[in-house]
Amino acid sequence: MHSMPEAFPPHPNDRKIREYNSSPNAEQLPGVRLGGENNEQLSVEMGAIDHIKSNPSFHLKTNQSGSWFHNEMPDGAISCATQKTFEMINPPTRDDMISKNFDDSHTILGFKSIKVHDTNKLNKTIEFVKSTFPCARVILNIRSHIKDQVLSQKAFLDIKKSDKNQTIFKSLRRENARMKRMVKMFGNERARLLDMVDWTNEETGLQYLNDVVYWLGFRDCKFNQLYHENTNGYESNNTGRVNVGPNCHYPENL
Image (cartoon, rainbow, N blue to C red; front, top):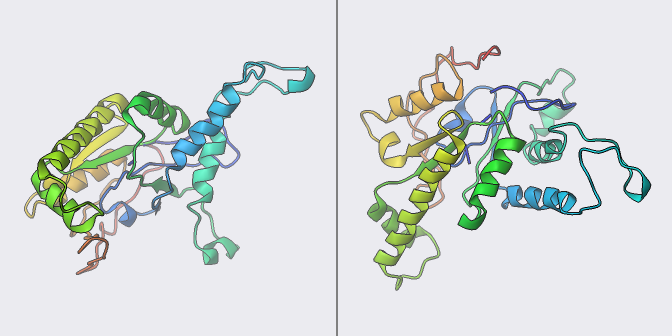
């Protein structure tokens, strides 16, 4: 979901990774490669690490001998596997990879994730993201006009027409409240809540997004227009060329 400034724990391929959760226009920022859905890979990674930690015979912070022998693992080392997985599923283009002059070491990676783990595991999920991606910035996106969202869901998602609007309304209200709670759990430095009602406003929406871009760490960036996706459900609707200006950049010294 949408954050991480500068570096992770020591890692052979140390890089910046940011998580964007359904964030508008993020893929237009320079030096950013944003990946799409990943089938809840975060949950898989959490399970893999839990599998290691849950065995009482395996001690991460100990030089072990015997059948479980291994050297002591340094702080942050266990996060490297998850970081590499999200790099692996969000690669550069094939042409870039075979180019001799291509350097991907300063690219900021991001991914979006619509599904968030159930409420019972929310604390654990937040702590996992914070420890695994310690430099992350996380963007969460809601739509506070819930009645409009109910109509949108019934029109384009696989929802029975017989489902009562009030039932869907209550469910969406709970989800929005959970998103707000997640932002508080991450803290304002790491997470930002975007309201679709605000960033789609014709008069103030662009400034709203530009402020978010500044919070992410980019400088001298101004979107000239909104990038419209999911027209009629899942179609793109690019009516013009979106750009953030010729001077938009991410300072290396932030």
